[in-house]
Image (cartoon, rainbow, N blue to C red):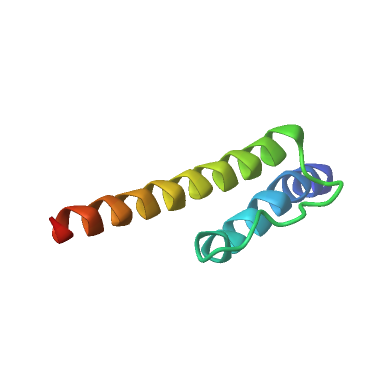
Length: 73
């Protein structure tokens, strides 16, 4: 029972840190260091989320430029 609890904690801790860091990532920060505990999959998820947030920011900025150009015509 203790071994199962420790294993679950080891697996969940990096996900919890990532979930807690998401608001900061959306606000402009980067993916948090997940430490040696993070599995490869969790690290890949953090990188993918960071990339998605960056692309969304770029698309939003491009949309604002396009709308500004349209409104001046």
